[in-house]
Amino acid sequence: MLTVLCVWALAQEPIPPMPHDPTAAKDEWVCTVLPKGVLYRPYLADPRQARSSVKFSIAGSDGSNAKIENTFGLVRSMVRWQEGDEAYEIEFEAAAFSRFDTKEHWDLDATDYRFGFPFVYRSGDLAYKFHLWHLTSHLGDEYIERTGRRRDGYHLNEAAFGVSWDPEESLRVYGEVGLAVYTGPDTDSGRVQLGLEWIDARARGPWVPFAAMDLQSRNEIDWSVNRAVTAGFLVRVGENARGLRVALEYYDGRDLQTQFLDQRERTLSLMFAAELF
Image (cartoon, rainbow, N blue to C red; front, top):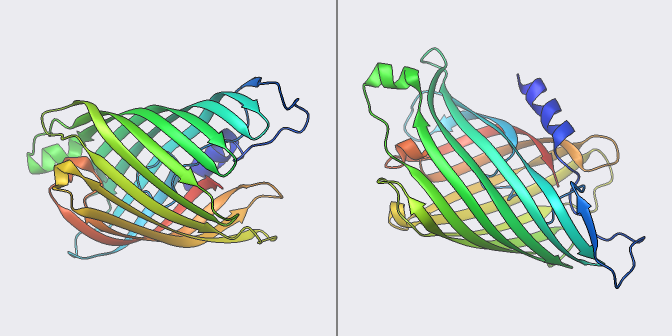
């Protein structure tokens, strides 16, 4: 399953950053449908970005059952207008985040579904994103049968604004805020997010080291902070940026599955992701 997932994602996802097309006239805007790359890359350490990955929980603070979390998704540039180092872009992103309990016959605990349409402007090392996205959360049938629990009415439509800055070739700093356009009965409005990424731009072989940190806080968790730190290697395929990301991830915060948002988790996980930098 992991092999199929990664091969599919590598075939679907584009090579990132773009940007300059030397054949385009400097005073002429060029429109491209389904171009390669994206102007605003998904955040590496954010556990809830649209990507395709498999994550194995290898340690937990409460001694609970081992979990496996599958993410099946992508980010795609739909149309881009570009002049030199300036560009506008409309993107599409979608993902499903599913968690399975290995000690309960691999039962599905819950799945979160999200999709959205980021509108991006990039000029040199700065990128700005206005992002309209939707999330809905569901319990697994087996989990409901085993526990008798009813599904919480969690769903969210949010408008988010993000800024990404590359102060150096290997560094990236970003921040994002979000306000709900519409919420379900068990959802609140308001979110802030900050992060830092390092990717070794000098690496020339197939192994590219990276490290990243993401901090998030939301109104519905009383503004407590969710912390995620990840580090590992991108195993590149050939000379391009496609590859398989192998990483350790440490997470400390409210449960990532929004059906269990009232619970706190502290986990160390091994992750394999079809990724591009």
